[in-house]
Length: 360
Image (cartoon, rainbow, N blue to C red; front, side):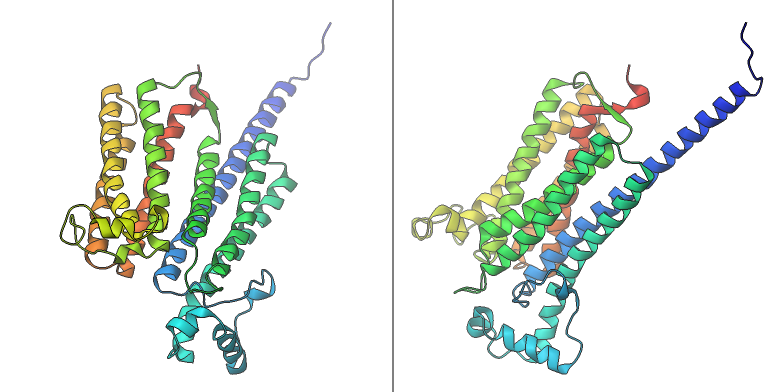
């Protein structure tokens, strides 16, 4: 014979509800944390773009991960920083007439860029330790977050590796290193978006539409290549090569002399020409993706947003070129690229995962 306390079922039910409430709350906090990280990383990319467009990236000639957080605090400190800067090619070859006041302006953007990188590290580590203490992080999530931490730490080193390339003989950073630095930052943002979207989700047994899935992947590859070529354009300052459109000077194609003037990956004219028309190819892939999404009656809004953003990006790119790369348009162009990447990742993710309570 079993004896059962009449309050036990009620107590168990309350305990179950309390546990569920804690789980929902923990997921909410983790989601806010990841979203904050995405915003910070994207802000970091934008500040990096401003740093590059203002010629500020080579103003701090040392890498001090810890003590570098303290800026010059008095006139003697500022003069010491300026004297260090004078020893390197950017000052000797380009800025010999720069005053201390002008140096402070370019120093500001590079300092903010590095400071934000440190703040991102703190914004990740402190909540991470708290979540571990509260036992809110699963083993699966832990593996994903460790990858993010590894990528973030490596990004700081790669940033200095890029800057160092402009402190040698010529005051220009390697466009390869610039592309790696930017690519890793965007990969970090993409990883955070993917992890955040995956909370409380389960993998589908199969994607809803194979042709839509394949088109999404093709669009992603094209967009990734286009963003990489955009970094090449920035690193080679190829945006200033020709500022008319659709012509390259007086012709549609670069002339033979310009084509033969340098190897492809060091030829600013050819890199710019490729970036111009690859953008239209990316836009076409977005249009096909939207058509397929409408036909399959899934992800129509997201695909529509992607197409609109893609059109905006092409227009921004053209006007950035015609106006000789003004800072506000260059930054807007880069920001829209980030929005495109995040939107496309959302489309891809939605074809792989579904809310856990909707899984059949």
